Length: 252
Image (cartoon, rainbow, N blue to C red; front, side, top):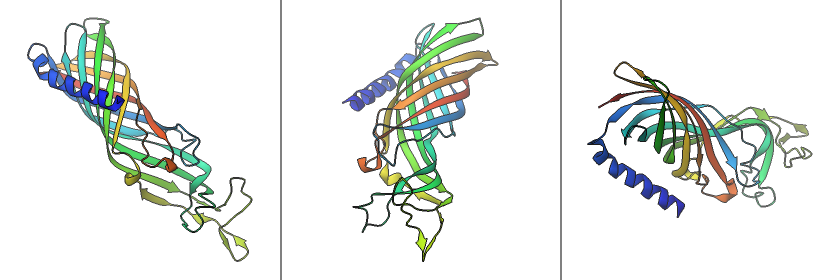
């Protein structure tokens, strides 16, 4: 129900934008910067908990429609690299179907990074406060929709494999020797992740007149309302991010 409401709100604003542009100023431009995403688990699943932030990039197009002296609607179309990372001793899925029932997880020490790349459409209401004749402070908030472009799980390192979290039962054994197994891999996990992610975004920024247009500095956060995993056995995670972006727009 919430997803349907957000989609209807986005569609209504987009349909209204052309008529507003006829009587108010339209600005278009580019924006991009540093993305700091994180996966947040809403359960205690061994595979999805304890992720920390990674860094990625976000860049694309931006447009705004002025609704008056201080109010505007802003829409971006962004490539956004998101996900999270988890390094150190951790669980991984047991690849052996014969023992999965008794041991759904195995344990090892390695670097693990989830890279989820989206095409995102944030749609925000923006309120501006003029600081001077050429500088304004603005706050903005609204919904966003993200479409998954690709998803990979990148693992690096080598480790002894254990059957238990207490590291008492090593299973990477050759003869009587316990060995470290290489764990380097780039695994496509796109079929495990929902294609659509709906969420909320908002933040503040500065706009400064320069030349024919305006330079914008954005600081905003976002949180996805959609659980990203298709199968709850892989966890129940939501994705969020902090975006620091610089942009430039010109009026049309």
